[in-house]
Structure formats: C-alpha cells, structure tokens
Length: 305
Image (tube, rainbow, N blue to C red; front, side):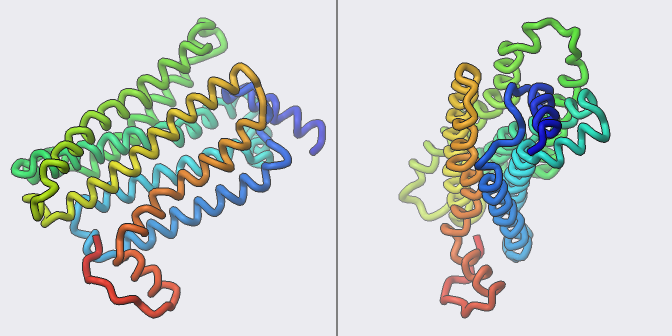
C-alpha cells in the first residue's frame, strides 16, 4: 500500500470516529472473504424465505425478512469500513469532511438497526403468545410492515440529524465518550431493554403453556417462532456486550489485533447465525434448499414453518 493510501485511510479513520487506519493487514483479505460469505448466506436466505409458500400469508415473514436485512446492512457497513478502495474513492469524490457524515450514518445504520427490528419483532411475538385474543385487532400486528419501516426510518433519521448537527465547533464532551454512551443508550440499550422485557414475558408464558397443545392463534407455530426469536435475540445481546467490551478495550489499548479477532471470530459468523438456526429448525426450509440444488428431497412433513 502506498504512503498516500495509508495517509488517506488514517485520516478517514479519524473522521469516522476511529483513531486507526481503515485497512487492516494482513487479515483484510480474510475479513473480506468472511463478509462476502455472510452476505451471500443472507441473500440466499431471503430467496428461500420468499419461496416458502406458507410464509407468504403470515406476519412471521416480516420478522425473518427484517432480521436478515439488518444483518445484510451490518455486513456491508463493516465491509465498507475495511475497504481501502471504496473509502479512498469516497474521499476523492466528496473530500475528507464530505465523507464523514455518510460513512458515520451508514456504519451506525448497520450497528443499531437490528435492535429496533428486534424490538418490533418482540412486540409482535408478545401479542401472539401473551395476548392471543387481541392479536388480530392490535395496531402493531395490522400495520407490522409499517412499524418495521418506521424502525429503519427512525435510526436513519436520528443518525443523520446527530452527525449533521455535530460540527467541529461542538462542545468537546459531545464529541467524546459521553456522546458514545448516550448513543448506545438511545440506539441500543433502550430498544434492547424493551425487547428483553417483552421476551421475558413470552418465556414465562411459553413455560406455562409447555404441556398445552397449541396457542390460540396458530396451532403451536407461534411458539416455534417465539423460540427462534428468543434464541437469535439472545445471541444478539451476547454480541452486543462483547462489542462494548471490544470498544472499551480498543479505546485504551489502540490495538488492531482486537479488531481483527472480533471480525473474524465473532462479527461475521454472527451475521450467518440466524440463517443457520432457522434452516436447522425448519424441515421444509431444508427440503426447499435441497430442491434448489437439484438434490433428491427427503421425506418431511408439509409444514413450512
């Protein structure tokens, strides 16, 4: 890498809130491969979901789609941050200061959207399991796609306004660790806390219903969907805590090794986890994948949930 490229990436790294160069060697190629695999996994997952006939008439499909879309945005944002060529092209076109806002917004969208997606999904599952009699009449259920769209729009708007308003003349504490803590509380801790409260109630209700045959709404399928959501959300919370620990350690040590290990061992595999879990728990999903690759279908029940 030339000295000009290194300098440009170092400058960009400071503009997007980091103190280290964007390009990480010698692991940048391996990280790029992992991100590409994860991206292809999630795109393939969306294709399979769109072909499962029984999902097309359910609210569950919106949850699955949005979780996977959130993972895709997260993958692209991380890959974009590590891409020397894209980053320098942005600087070349817009200038150093012009690249700061769109890059920050894009990276923030990848980091924080998933928490609001899980909050909306948790509310839907809470109504399905704990309030089945009022499920169909709930405004959340009747306008579920709108709520998901509002979650994406809120994160995008909040990040854009915050970065546009934050100039270099802003008070130092706003640009320091206090601002990071405030952002984590509003954009991650708040929606995650709401999801934890709702899913805790769902867990209690599922435990009470353990010996019953089904829920009121969907002959037991809502329970399967709720268990899937609880598993995926639990993994999201584990990764969130690890991410906070990683950022804290990095801020004190300023070591690139931690970032490399984080992305290779945790971040990229995590974005493939929901795809693997849903495929592993759903026989019809496995059957459809086999058919797509020309394999002989196994004998499974016709249930596609």
